[in-house]
Length: 95
Image (cartoon, rainbow, N blue to C red):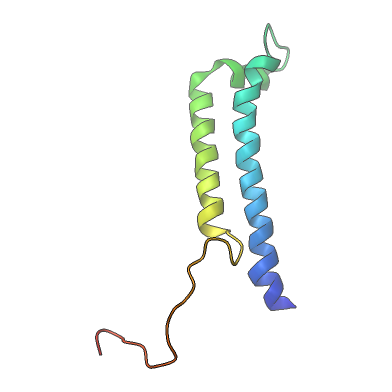
């Protein structure tokens, strides 16, 4: 049970959380201009709607989070190459 938790469930949960964070961050950048159409009373919403530096940084951070999810937290069996080694001795350093 402990091996299955470590090999399947934790990477899967981390993958979903990291990819979800990236989607929320990108969604905040995309939706905030429509929500804060006029003068907004919420300073964070106004910051995402009007400041181009914050928007660029948020998009770059969302792409980095998505890359992190696919590189480090990809669940077992997703886009993994199968190990085609035979049962014979492995060639180490050309030996």
